[in-house]
Image (cartoon, rainbow, N blue to C red):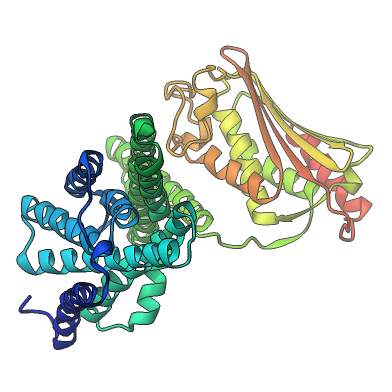
Length: 496
């Protein structure tokens, strides 16, 4: 307590003083009949039960968020405030609070403050219930609702005042923030206390039937709190991971680019020197550097996706993008029959609203992926066809296929189904670069970002079919001239 500010110390002292003054006023001005202890065996049994519950429940609070705990003792204490006169209810709540604080080995200043604020809240709730029920003749069933609300407001007012004083903040906004954050959790506990009080007063024999249901409700609160904490920790971990990936990708790009440039220079000198073994080693290092460069580029794309970076949307001629992607992937085909088929009837109308560079990356990923897992002598065919207001691009291969167990996981980041599926020893397989497990994740993100759909069919030993469906643009740009389109088609035919 020595580190507290003077304002915090004054706020701490004001709560015990207010609780003491409230009890003294009750003794001085409230009729003794309203402050007398309970009468009868059943009343004493109920009183003892509530005090014991308040002690036990206070010893096992639930951490609903970092640094914030919720105690179910509020239910038993509210029941005391509804059932018994104000002074007696406050006295029992104080005894329960002291016992739980002592058993919990809390510091003396925390014990004094917690017991005082609980006592003050019980006094306010009990006085409210007594005034409404006995002063105005309101049924207890009705009066207990505002009494529970007064208890909650008084309790949060004391706690928020202490928190605001220690943090040197304004009390009003702190109180409102605490009410807003805690009402959803406290309302269940207060409702449970109201139900206990009503059953003890009107149907005590039915209380054993109520307690198991309240216990189950409390367990639900505990599990929900644990799930929220796990979600918070998971979200924090994911944020840290994304930040690390972004930072690492940025920091590694420059040294990797410098290393690759130096290796290219070294490779030229080694080739002139005639040392075949050294040349092969430098080539391997160059290929690995290129692989790391491609991996960093993929990581940067995913980092932008996680950050919600906007796409450069424009009306794009889908046929031109497909032809450009086909030309770029064609040198990787090797002995694979690689074909591009366009819909003659509708190709002039195939315009989509898209980011052209991302669309090119999407189709290039699918084409190179199909080539990577199709053995020599196999076939990879890319087909584009119109389907009403949408366009479907299908990439079919006769490769090794994907098992039914791997199929649901292929879009997960860094997941590689059957790493031995690629064409081992084939220098043309994906440019000699192994997959990183990010290509299909990026492809799926691009399709989703463009409002399209992705469908995959595959069978082990018979190949795979990747189908991308995109919405057509309603306002196409000026189509390419017939001469340009004819030249593109001729180039594709020759390449095939």
